[in-house]
Image (cartoon, rainbow, N blue to C red):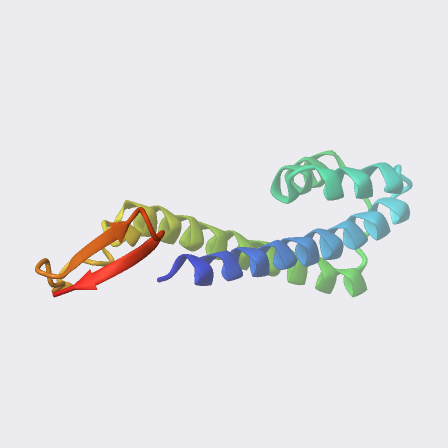
Length: 134
């Protein structure tokens, strides 16, 4: 897998990560607001800190109450996107490691090229020009 393809996948995963953060931040905001907690604080924590860490902390700390069934789709889709994003990032990082570890770099580009050593290239310093002779 080429480095350019891996970079494109990493850009794609950045967009997936933003989508996961947005979905989960909306869910946390709505759930925290329903439970009488500081919804803006939890939403900002979700945006600026790791999705999985804040989600686990929120689910442990949140106040007991009725779960809004209409917002569970946000939670499930946000978690799904976050998991897919994490798996893609892991595969991309492994691909990058293997592509840099392989010995197929630019220094091997001319291996196997047959060039003619008998061709003489002489530079004439008096006329500042090249004299090509066989």
